[in-house]
Amino acid sequence: EADIYQTPRYLVIGTGKKITLECSQTMGHDKMYWYQQDPGMELHLIHYSYGVNSTEKGDLSSESTVSRIRTEHFPLTLESARPSHTSQYLCASSGGQIYGYTFGSGTRLTVV
Amino acid sequence: GNSVTQMEGPVTLSEEAFLTINCTYTATGYPSLFWYVQYPGEGLQLLLKATKADDKGSNKGFEATYRKETTSFHLEKGSVQVSDSAVYFCAPHRSYSSASKIIFGSGTRLSIRP
Image (cartoon, rainbow over all chains, first blue to last red; front, side):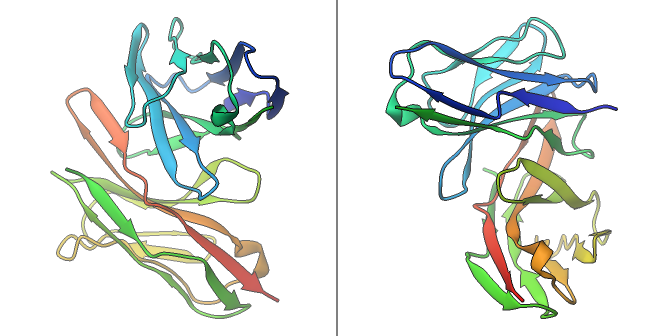
């Protein structure tokens, strides 16, 4: 079944650690996105990609980085986690304007 | 630029009440319009969509009509249930050349009392 997967669902990690949040989709979508969701629910675009080897920063400045080496895989990395990175991270992909986005279940990150 | 204004929450209703969540947008060109729903602890799910003027999207008893003249896409349901408690996001989606980004509203939290 075509879908989009995020791992882990929950992560508690110490300050200064390097972490990678995984996102994979089986739909063959070129366009993929990372959103950060604050406790007030608002979604902030932090990274996006329109295809392999294409990555762009989003509207909200983020210390994270992303890569897109394969169509199906769009991981997000934090080199040195800080408590201010505590948030929910949502990955999405799109097959085009009329289809909208398909979201993963999210990763809730807590940095202590 | 593109933007969306969504009814502020939280909205609290009794079961079987009528629901309206207002959404208006500004966008260049001709966007597709979406409503997404987020249940507690989960990612967003597509609830319904409309891709051209006067189209009505519907799903799970929810409806919304693409009103180009008023640039609106209000979400309605005739009789809400406790299971409808969630956060709802209005989202126009416009693609042009290679760019394709959805602009999300700020979300409306809906709570339904038994």
